[in-house]
Amino acid sequence: MRPEIIPAIDLIDGKCVRLSEGDYTRKTEYRGDPLEVALQAEAHGITRLHLVDLDGARAGQVVNWRVLETICSRTGLRVDFGGGIQSDEDLRVAFDCGAVQVNIGSAAVKQREQFMEWLRARGSDRIILSADAKHGKIAVHGWQDQTEIWLQDFIADYHAAGIQWVTTTDISRDGMMRGPATDLYQDLLGTFPELRLIASGGVSSLADVDTLAALPLAGIIIGKALFEGAITFAALEAWHLQR
Image 1: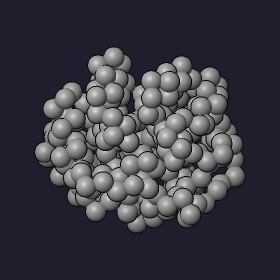
Image 2: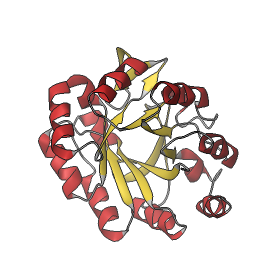
Image 3: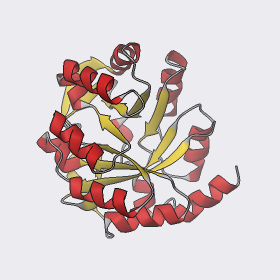
């Protein structure tokens, strides 16, 4: 099955932004309301959106829930939402606002028992493990804190516990427009062939999309390349129709 193309909208103060390597001091703010971007994506045949609350990731609680609610109520996009989900209330807000799935990273590291309860209560089809790493080790809290947990060990632990969906970002490539970490995804899929892996970070051209689409990925997240115009929604629509 071909991977699903998933545009990403990162939010600070309710606005579309992109960070370089997860660094909040290296922020680029883009024109355009998040809803307008989501509507444009939908108009070109996109069916899914990755929405990241960077304020929430840094604060440790969901902040930009109104943007999530607006996009979910005004479009038919299936939204997976992440950033700051660390309590039952955060999880409730995300789903009540319309998220189809949630991405959870920090809580999976810091609150294992709570994370496992969410997995049991909500189901493995609704919880995505955010396994984002720099130099092979997991980073949390908006990628501001580096742990000593190896990426492969982190995924193996939760895969054994029932996780089916994983989003993995090589943080050193995120927002850098230097191509995706293809070897990393190949290694993960070789180790965990049943995993529904979503690749994120570094996609800068349709050639990158082609390269990743050759892998048995569940999805390909595209962020900065769309906001910088290196890839357009129209080009993605044409790419999809040609396959």
